[in-house]
Structure formats: C-alpha cells, structure tokens
Length: 221
Image (cartoon, rainbow, N blue to C red; front, side, top):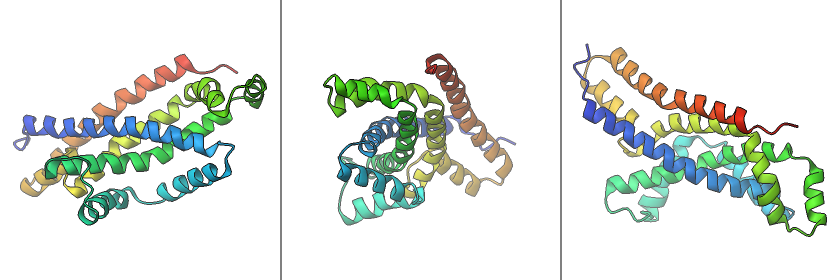
C-alpha cells in the first residue's frame, strides 16, 4: 500500500517546505512591519503607497505573484537574486514572491494591533519630544505585537500551506514531490494522506505553541 514511500525524498521535500516557510516568514515579518509603519505614518504619500501596496497585492492570486517572479523578473528582466543554478534561482524567486504576498497580511494584522494601543500613549510620548519613529518602535509596536500573536500565527500557518504554490515554478518542495508520485503510482489516497499528515505535523505544533505564547504575552487592558 505504501510501496511508493521513499523517506529520503519525502524528508528532503518537506525540508525544502520548511526552508521556504522560515525564510518567507522572516522576510514578510520585516516587510510587513515596514508596511504597517507606512500605513500609520503622518506622511500622506507613505500612507498612500502602503495602502495601495496592501490592497493590490492581497487581491492578486499567489500563483500569479509566484509566476511573475519567475517569468517577469527572471525570464524577462534577468533578475536571478544571486542564484548560481536554476534550482537556487527558483527557490529564491519563490521566497521573494511569498514575502511580497504574505507581507500584506502581516501588515494588516499589525495595523489591527496598533489600533488597540490607546491614542493617549502616543500623544504623551510626542509631548515628551519623541519622534514618530521613536513612538512607533519604542511604545506602539511592542504592544501591537503582543496583541496580534494569534493573527500572526494564522498568517504563518497559511504561509506554510501556501509554499505548495512554489511548485508551479519547479521548486522541489512537498507538493512538487506529491505531484510526481501521483503521476507515477496508482495510489492517490495513500499519497495524499501521507502529505496531509506531513503538513499537519508542521502546522499543528506551530498553532499550539503560538497560542500558548499569545496567552502568556497578551496585554491586559
């Protein structure tokens, strides 16, 4: 029943999925935080740019974003992101596409957390002479992050599942291997069950751990 099972190939594919998730999560957290800062900035132009980016990107299917990085950036403009071979280039382009897409959702989660911080705290800090950047980074964002651990966990779980889209540009992650096995072996249900179990092993502990963290760091108001 499980004759197709090649543990080395399976673990290797899921390792690529884990790397895609980790690199994309770090990048989208950084870019999403900058976007959130732009969306609450006192400078109108920055608010417009941040709002436009979020509204445009999150309404584009992820598959289109990933294909654009491959066909638009690499094939048309020759952007290889320093990759030495086709495999490395595709991996880096997939990470770039996942960052660009996921950052829009991180931004909105953070912006909701910023809205939970009482306005009086920011006004008091400005009265003490702190700049907008100091108020945002020293007072507002630390509280905002503590308020949105659960929404950010949901974004991370969605990102883990979204890594399967990277297979459309040939990144050999879990979904890419699953497609190959389905085409080779007549065992659709066992193959699907194996990969479903693999993704549950990745996402369930993430949700449980971050749920526990959320309860520990929640801001009592």
